[in-house]
Image (cartoon, rainbow, N blue to C red; front, side, top):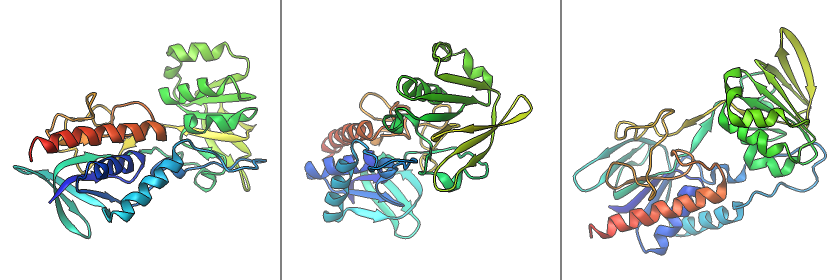
Amino acid sequence: MYDLIIIGGGPAALSAATFALGKRLKPLVIADDFGGKAGWQQRLTGQVDEEYLAGAEAVNVFLQRIIQAQCTMQDRVRNVTKQDQCFAVETEHYGVQQAVALMVATGASPIELLVPGARELVGQGLGYSVTTHAHLLAGKVVAVIGNTLRALRGTVELAPTASHVYLIVPDASLLSAPMAHALRRRSNVEILPGGRVKQIVGSEHVEEVVVKFHAELRRIAVDAAFVDLGLKPNCGMVRHLLELEPGMFINIDQRNATKVPGLFAAGDVTTAFGEQTLIAIGEGARAALSAYDYILARR
């Protein structure tokens, strides 16, 4: 029996496991792979140095710590059940593991842009998180593709430093938001309402975005393109235990607790806004602290 099982291998999960070890708990981290988005760097044309991602070093330290403590299990979770005094976590290869408390930090997967060239150029100027890589794009020409508030927020963040930003919005209804009105006042932002991306072009890096706009194809030369068509939270293993928010995100309180006693969550799988490694690290530690209090009360 473990004190705490953490499902997920990203910054929130690894931070939580490190915190748990510091409190002398017996944790188990179950994930397909470890590191999460902390290592998702971009390479742009003309880029000399590797992109710096704040928090990536800490995530590597956490990972080495929990590997040394032998509390990782590389596997996929099939199902979770709540029993009288514990949670039972069923995995594909190693069977059922039990713990007093459970934490879900499985992240969220971006909805892919399914056009020619997109998948091949991921990480080579095409990405799915504008805010993570905005610091890399000063003086660059950038396309932001999507009809979400995250796409708008990313464009607002890019606008002060990027040379030019094309906001390609498939659904023009988003443009009634206050941030969209602010973007219209910026001379270096061009909004293409109803634009549909048909192709991402590039040999080694993103070079062009082909857009169908007003029944015509337009080829736009860019240094990078960032897509935000929405996120899919990876929480299928616990959806039967929780009342999920619209979009299937896990609702948490200020202590990262769900409405199920002993079940905590952190990171992009939750309703907490962030999508940054440093924020996920903090969220993971706070969730682990809440789990620690829960476990102490039952010892």
